[in-house]
Length: 135
Image 1 (tube, helix red, strand yellow):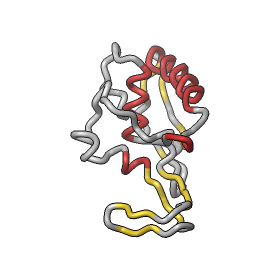
Image 2 (spheres, one colour):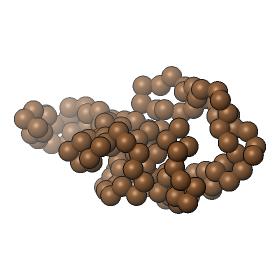
Image 3 (spheres, one colour):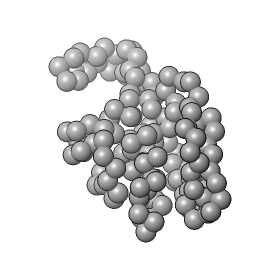
Image 4 (cartoon, one colour):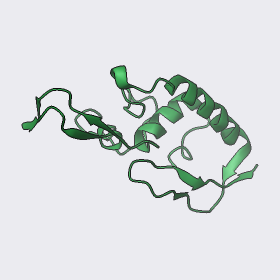
């Protein structure tokens, strides 16, 4: 739905980057604090479980102006694939595969008028079906 209004000339990589920022398929991950720390005035003890919300971090207005608006070529990387030593090791491969599929869809298909439904899951947002029509 975010990409439908994007100009045809917009590079698929830029389209994917902003769509994945706005609507990441992996919305959160869990970690365990390895050491005590202070975070935004709250003490987190070593061994405490943490839920890291990529969807919320990607829309942090302190990091991105107009966080809910689609902005192609927005500066700053989204956290959709994580970051640092715990970042997804397959992000480049995943984006290349997705770009190939999205390129074909953008050239040859139009979205159907059916709503997209998602599988119920607390941290994943995965469509159960995506209908298109050939142009």
